[in-house]
Amino acid sequence: MAILIKNARIVNQGSILESDVLIEGERIKKIAEDITATNEMEVVDANGSYLFPGFIDDQVHFREPGLTHKGNIATESKAAVAGGITTFIEQPNTNPQTTTIDKLEEKFGIASRTAYTNYSFMFGGTNDNLEEIKRLDKNACAGVKLFLGSSTGNMLVDNEQVIERIFSSTDMVISAHCEDEKTIRENMERHLSMYGDDIPIKYHPVIRSEEACYLSSSRAIALAEKTGARLHVFHISTGKETEQFRNDIPLKEKKITGEVCIHHLWFSDADYDNKGTFIKWNPAIKKASDRDALWKAVLDDRIDIIATDHAPHTLEEKQSVYTKAPSGGPLVQHAFPAMIEAYHQGKISLEKIVEKMCHNPAILFDIKERGYIKEGYYADLVLIDLNSPWQVTKQNILYKCGWSPFEGTSFRSKITHTFINGNLAYNKGVFSEERNVKRLEFNR
Image (cartoon, rainbow, N blue to C red; front, top):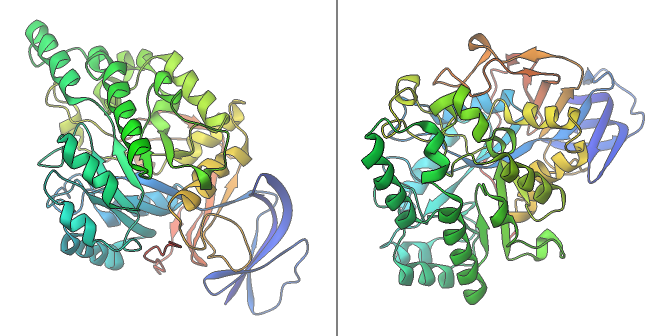
């Protein structure tokens, strides 16, 4: 049955337009001011709510395989649906790691059976899998991920010659975690000598410092410029780093791009006293002045994408002392509402949110027929009631880990409907029993 969305305010391509949207099958059939309903159509009356393209999250850690006590593709993607995310790109630092083509395809198999949203994955680079990267088809997955600092197992890529060879050997987007490991180790040893394992959390941004971030990202950018590689710097956390990115050309023409995460736009180091290790991330949340600089770079287009870096851990793990508490936190259910709250606060327009969270991920990763509300595109859509307040509580958190850094936060806007490939996957708190999701395709 076709679905007709009536009386929506469509936020798309820099404008807001009052219109109807007709969905037939998996795609948007027609966008027009007044589409007449027929008996063959299911009508969803938006009543003036805002219709967004589905959010494409280019950085999540869903913990499967191997770490499923924290979360898995099914649980975390289901939470993502409630958060308006219709597509995720998952990272390779699972167990086993996604550093061979066989392991990549195994992950795609899991997602095809259990994911609640559209999906793709990053292929992980190591110091010794260059030949596997060369064998990787450019349309097989979203791109290559390099941990140039802060990783587990053998995924820390710290051999300069290997990094240069990887940069020179693939046309795919190389997404990088940039923190200088040597600087972090020295800072950590100094604080361990003073405090032992129970280092006060307020020193996290001192240990994982601005210097550590800038040293690593500046080296990666210099190498990308030297080799012509397509580099995307994940989770930028400092104002100093934003100065390395340009905004004088369209995103499609950029060879070097950047991403910021929700937590670096929302929190500052002043929140450690209240939130403690629940806001321990790598890279660390830093000063309010860094947060202000990140917002400025988002608005003037030096930063291209807003993502989550969703990375759940159990409550028990997060409540450990500093050295044992893992970095990361769950965000996919609350990222879109947090950004709409920033709109209410006057920090960003609805159109700019859509640009950074929907359009730009599709452009940057060459995702086929998603990220926009266009006739002929897949019907990945989200309806948001801007005047429907609610509070994040233990009872409405959907993550497997059962907690959120936003617990106790009140939002003024609520996601009411999420459509994925034309299927009404989420309707006012109720999930569809039908899963109609797809492996991403790319225009490369």
